[in-house]
Image 1: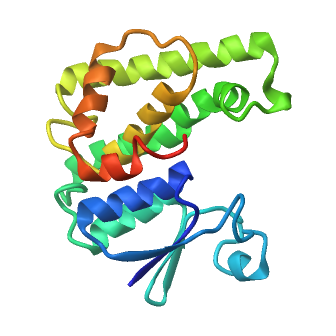
Image 2: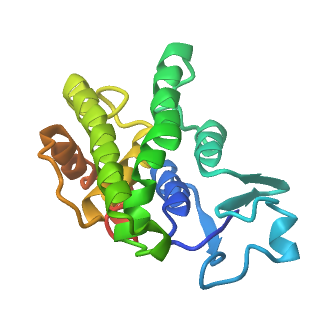
Image 3: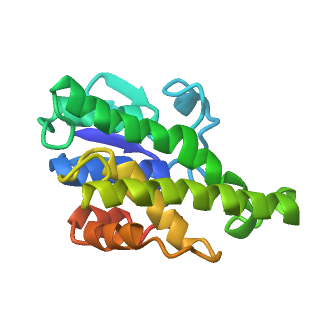
Length: 207
């Protein structure tokens, strides 16, 4: 059985949990990370030298890095409906997965650390205002894409890209700031709620 190491409140662990729900993969999860077993322990570092969750063990195969993990799960467990084999269709999915990691994730970092984590190192008013502006800009890009597709981020059908993007949208709505009226993002959020995986691991997790 698939073994998942990481606390369920982690946004990156929730990607893996949601993917398992979509692919109907049975798993066992162990609490590792903040407030639980230390990722700095020798046992964990032997699995992931970066000391970050999640880590999976699929038989004798160990893997870390959440977006890589969900790609692996889709490829290994007959997930072509989420992660198509055809090169152009797969590239479109990968494009948005990578955008979430490189652009969207980076745009929210200051505002999230300031407003949700309340870190004393992230309380500069000017930097916070700029962070909110950048996050809103990224969400505007997503809104325009969703207007084009009319449904999901990479096209008409739900795909693997909607897992990291959907969790990012959850984080956006759960952060206490003034949210511009992005109608397509709002509709997308409600559309995702129709999926059991999102109800279990999206809207009820800690952002």
